[in-house]
Image (cartoon, rainbow, N blue to C red; front, side, top):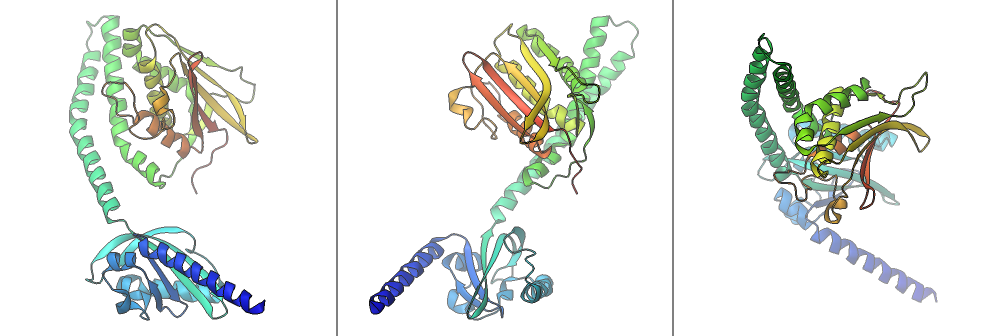
Length: 371
């Protein structure tokens, strides 16, 4: 019985090792293990491809062969601190840093560290991904955005300047003055959006720091309503703004957040609702209190009479999701979801043929600046 148990244990151990090898050897990521003395113990095919060293060239050598010289002291200090105190400053976290190939070229990596203890000591594991392509795409994207901001700013500045000059004229009719004022306001708003496009990129990366200030949602919605008037007139659509009965001490239309970003979010959602709506069908926008998980929230509900096509419902808030809208990029709802998350809120929808679509943004009533 005892012999059979040992044989079974050895068989299970071998099966476990085989599974480990199958996973590590087929992984495109580098999977490396090292001892507490900084010596490399295992080095998979992914590591060979990423770093350029064969396993037999590195086993038993220090892991610092893949660390640029200027970061080696920080590595030594971190290992010593962990072995002495057990403090896990970076273990278990996903980090982006720079590594060194065999040919001494540096490249960006995404690193996740782990550790384990056994009777023979403490060991470290690292999963490393080469993110060179990702960084290049991010750089191209940033360059394109910078060029777009530059190329679009000049004509927009000219348009807003011309509208400003028209408004100084004394022979304009009320209708002409209103149109010139709308052109100026829309141009200035678009310039502001261009200036803040980098903020949206930082939100995607999770690095944007919000500085919330008191914001009146009704004032924002009134401005958006005026800006979208040409579109609503074209489709003979009315926008109905309503607000729940406010208490003496609390007003659901008063939130804390970034006014420009909240206006960008609501403008995207309201414009989408108008474009999706049938002609002459009213759009409803309501603001009320909502209770979610013991937290008081401001709920902004944008309602139109059209249901969301079934083929895009599962991806409605993802980038480049669009259906049947000529010239649509599918970024409006995606940017709106980024802004809602940045404000520690959420965005969701309900849709049906009978009820149409409700897009509901929930924002927390208490929001602090990022620490």
